[in-house]
Image 1: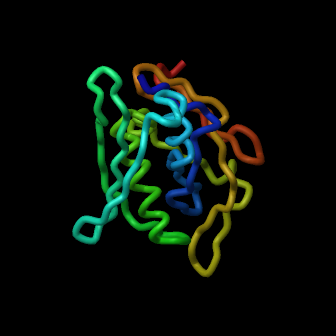
Image 2 (image 1 turned 135 degrees about the vertical axis):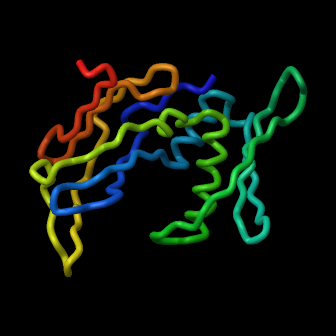
Length: 169
């Protein structure tokens, strides 16, 4: 059974910015997937393989099933990174997507809408007609029940800037 992600394993990324604030997305890194696979299956009991199919990068993560005495595999396709090394980003993305198929970070699929108002952003400004926010955001705390986020607190340099409680209390 794959455990839930912890707050320090979840990264925040600014998705869009206006003069009124910014929207955040939550994501996990490939390092987190590898760490969890090591924890759950053991360092020597899982493997990954990359292949190109019709110009797309696929990653297959295989786990050794002791009962069946065989490798069980799950695969997914990645997309090029918009920033930095495109090929590395594509490989990393395919690995993370294959990790989702093993249950790593499934809770991120039902992340609530995260809006940070302008007064909670330190570095919200307009550059050449385009709004930007260079704040670093962090998951301060997260509650997950049955692979669904039920509570979430986000902070930046100014302090807590977002709070979500599914129950509304």
